[in-house]
Image (tube, rainbow, N blue to C red; front, top):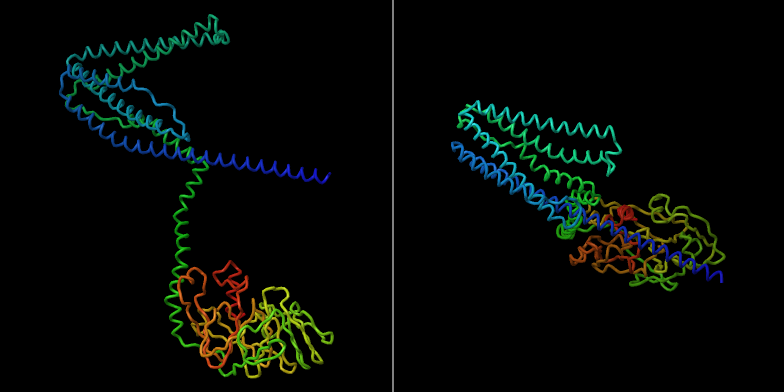
Length: 574
């Protein structure tokens, strides 16, 4: 019963955690989508406002030129004509000012394009109103100059009257403000309590204040216009110039520019916008890197396939040691047969040690042995090549010496796909062999084993295959060889081509060269190597494994350090 409860509890906990995870993912996704939509809407609104500002810049120039042209035509007009034009300007200004205002803007809201268009239209109206106002003020001054030039005294008297009216309006406004201050000082809380006498007095004064402010501003504007007219009285009308005040035009467009600044601030503060901007900055570089990663390997393979590989095929082959005999004997079914061909391996092999034989083998490959054999540890297969032995795993070997004939069964027990073959090199024969495929050797006690090293730095074949050093085993010796799904031995027979990745060894008496793969597409797609090993000669053998293991060498273009390590080992023939 407790087990059922425990299982049910775990199921409920997992379900609750899964539910919380799903809710979290959905909320995060909704937040990310909303942020991106807000940024995208702000970006579109900014583009609309920026385009509107640019368009208004051109219209501003046209409106200025049109206004200056109209003023120029009225330069010598009569006072009555000026009055008529001033009245027309006033009506036009009133009509433009009566149009509805644009609504308040808020960036990040989808579908706010109409508000942005309304703001652009309002900015154009404000610009036009400002130009018309400047034009009207100039014409008013021009009309005043035309009239005041006849009666300066009347103009001075008019200025005095306007000034007195301004002073009276200003004093009335100050009286109102002082009366409000006295009410607040004497009855602060009652002045804000509805229903009290003080509240009614203060409310009446506040309403009067707005009217007094408008009257004061109108009186001040009239005084300024009259002063401007008096400043040009007596001057010839032809000398008066209409100069547009660009600062006031900039102020008329201030709301539009303020909205653009607010939109830019919002876009820069939005994390989705910052991320998009960062991606936009590095996207060209990333695209170039991606394109190079895609095209550079293809270009390199084209050069290798159509230039270097054909050049290598035309070069003469080289011999590692052409004076060796090239003979090879292969064990099969417990016996020995000379120059055997085909698959010469099995999951296990029986090794019969004679008196005076010494076997050096990896301990994991000994499946069974007679009780009469004596074993010890051999720390290195060949002390003259310690680094090669360490890289190939030929260290800490089991040394077996029998005083009488004994049978030992060897098998790569830890590798289910590997098979064992016994290759015997008679005296006078030698073979290039990769130590990575060796699991052990058998030799006479009085004839110790040595690996010879041959370098071929001057051969293009060696450089293209990235194998510059060749390790040679000389007979008499028996090589215990391991290969994936089996080991095959083929006679050269005047020429044989083998997949380079599968080659384990070849007789030193054969001529070695490279042969380009037949078709380009498999090489381009990585399904076939560029070069195959080619062997020529009358006497000699080549040894290769039936299939490539899963951990086959990846080369310099393989995965990270593993591929680099494989390439280095291949250079040294390991």
